[in-house]
Length: 183
Image 1 (tube, rainbow, N blue to C red):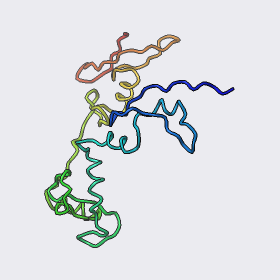
Image 2: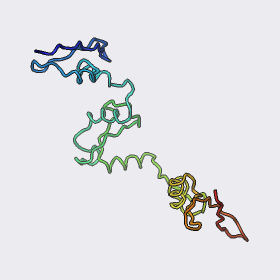
Image 3: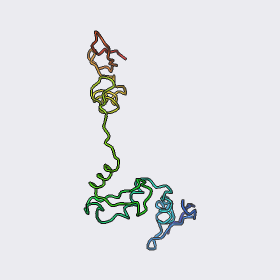
Image 4: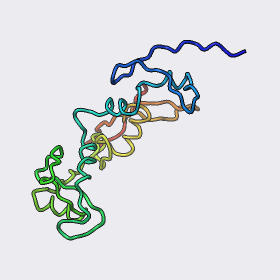
């Protein structure tokens, strides 16, 4: 005896607001679980829903690739081709504003038109004065910060067990010396 078909839940397409119905594939009704997960009536509605009014940088660059020529406009190279926006506005993808350059020529163009070298300042650890790596801390204090939540915390053996203590830098007779305090 065949099973009685349960009534389909009422679902609405998120894009066009039409009621969704279970589809048939080669005469076989769409699985109820697949129907339950479906949010759109077809791929066109899904694409319209996912299209954003304001595109991000990556989407704008993808759109500009359509206008890329098959060789560099400066040297004629055919590899590592980039799209350069002449007026530096990435949202302006008009063909007059786009220039096809290979990677080396693209870099040269920016250096010739005002790019300045950024010098990284020598940063030092705010705790001990050693060269800093991350968050203005040397490797030792950064690891302590990640492990204990405080760059001055360290593990000391007291008796037969280890205890986490706060290590502060004190100055005695003009010299820095560590002073441990139990927390």
